[in-house]
Image (cartoon, rainbow, N blue to C red):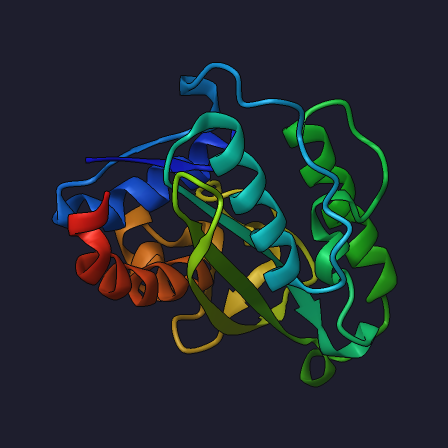
Length: 205
């Protein structure tokens, strides 16, 4: 059973594969398929809306069942920003690494002088599963609570992981081993919820 995950981010594809492999599902990313079409405009005002846009678009373009996510960081002191703009918060960067570094730098600037007690934040992930015709068949969401550090720590993960502290473990998300991060992460939370729905839908694949 193959499932297209609507992302070219190898970190995300590995996370999804690691969690769904117990269902004997082979997860492939957009790099593994031809004729995926142009990237859709993610103009939704919520994570759920953007996940839906991607799942429907790529399912129709490829004729495959498609799982898509939209995720990001919501910081309380910034009124929920970066939110749906998380991936391009700084608006600069030629590749993913450059964008991540620029986004983290901007976040630290925005929070400069904010006391630790007011640096609370959460990672949010919305997921949408569409069948081969582009019909939405399942949607879930997940979250992970934490606080924003004053400087990056750790080399695992990607995005805002080096700044996202999990107080109960005393480390950032980027300092967690991948298997533990999958258990705790917002994406893992949303994936486990959708995995239960996929079990029921498996005969339709």
